[in-house]
Amino acid sequence: MANNISRRRFLQTGALALGTVAVSRYTGIGNALAAQQERSQVFFTDDISAAGLLKIYSKINRDITGKVGIKLHTGEQHGPNILPRDLVKALQQRIPNSNLVETNTLYKGNRFTTAEHRETIKINGWDFCAVDIMDEDGAVMIPVKGGKHFKEMSVGKHMLNYDSMVVLTHFKGHAMGGFGGSLKNIAIGCADGPIGKKMIHGAPDNVHYELWLKGEPFQENMVESAKATIDHFGTRIVYINVLRNMSVDCDCAGIKAAPVKAHDLGILASTDLLAVEQASIDIMYKLPEAELHDLKERIESRKGLRQLSYMKEMKMGNDRYELIRL
Image 1 (tube, rainbow, N blue to C red):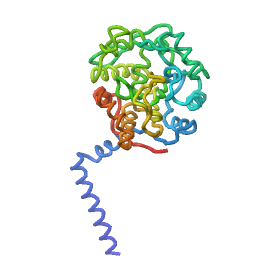
Image 2 (image 1 turned 30 degrees about the vertical axis):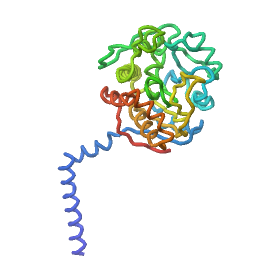
Image 3 (image 1 turned 90 degrees about the vertical axis):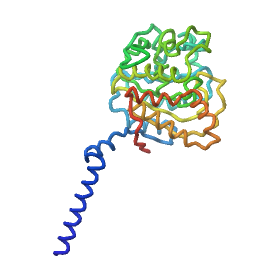
Image 4 (image 1 turned 120 degrees about the vertical axis):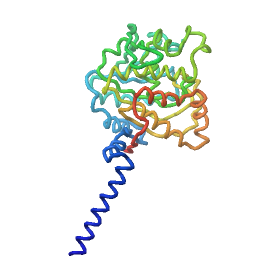
């Protein structure tokens, strides 16, 4: 009995000693626990199906209420890499009082005018529900809190009609952004065509693409535009990235998109924009070299990783995350 008591006291004393070391090393047990809690949750599934999408959405949808806009990049006509319609339809039908939302483009393609855009939506099979082209009736300015490039951003006027937003994104490369994830989907995708997109691109007009902003200035403009939308919705916005058919080109390229070299990876989702973007890049960068090479070159040659570092500077989320596999 005495030996057992002595052993117990030794263990208790040892635990206290270890606790003292922990306190001195981490300046408080509370701080150590807080450091662990600072990680944002990012959910992941390799099941790229309607069932997989619905399962992962169920992990992040707590604050999605009221009238819900599902922000989807509808793509140019016959784009080979756009998200499968059955995935998008299954999610839309699961979310009460929801519809797809989009805006017209700045470049003169098949989504430049509302009439052209609606025809493209029909051709690409998105007409299974209402699609709200948010700048059909004009635009409205909303604040960019803490921005160094913008104090306000012009977005499609109809965005103000929604209580919540689900950002459903085909994660892939992008000609100017380097990569197009959830940030690009709302930064460019919620800005109206004639004003907001022109502000972000620093575009003198719709023709001289070579004069548009490039590199870090463009990435920072995108981040500030996205911040306006995030601040508008508060906790009522969530992000889903589908890492499938990842060409180096955006769905803006339509049938001209470069061939896909990377294999499909899965779906990531979070209530934290920076966390889901960082996790998506981290997973992509683990691809075999032959599959990663073109995507990495596209991202880094356009200074695309500035999206992540500037989001952190703008306090738009957490680059530390816990990946939860479903």
